[in-house]
Length: 288
Image 1 (tube, rainbow, N blue to C red):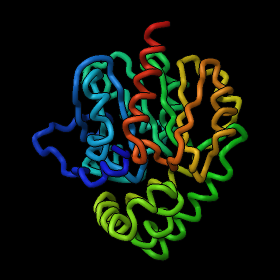
Image 2 (image 1 turned 180 degrees about the horizontal axis):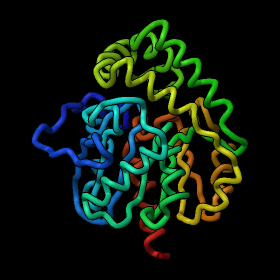
Image 3 (image 1 turned 90 degrees about the vertical axis):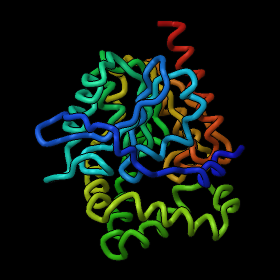
């Protein structure tokens, strides 16, 4: 089944009986835990919430323990004050792992959350078994292009609201093939889901925070945990050549290119994405 057909099965409702986990003072995180085995923690970009992972990770759930959560100030996690810094987001993630008695985990970052995955690998390598950077927002030369895109999205959001931002983002983030497959009905249906995921304030805060990273290629040389870069060949932000060059900057990095997929390739082809993650983890564990 093409991954984008899973969109019709998306369930974005929250499990109200799930207890929140306290991390920093005044911060409680909503989380979900599914399956058993080696832990994989899936970190949302600022545009998505924890429940959105369910239909795109069903195969991994059979063999691994899957953790997902809403970042502080987003979704069903606590809101308050300024948008957390990357350091505070890392503190929250470590606190979540501690509370769930997870000694170490694989991290899957998507789009903006690849920054958080990279920072965790740099500053908390003892807690990370490996990282999967899906549609990373930094490239082998830097991230100037990413900041320009985020700035344009932020301007659209501030002038035209969530609906305008969706109209701006949709043809950039999603692949041409998915766009053709879904047509106008899919476009309109997903617009309703997108509008329900976040408030204007959440999105403004997230986009503003996303521009505060100063990626430098030399940062990756010190990352010792294995890294997998996964990029759709129709990603508007980073192409196959740049993805391979980025992976080569890690001491232990590799790249996988997903055909006919966009910036969030697991939406286009969830089955292939999960198979790539499974192969990566099995290989890392075999050589540990």
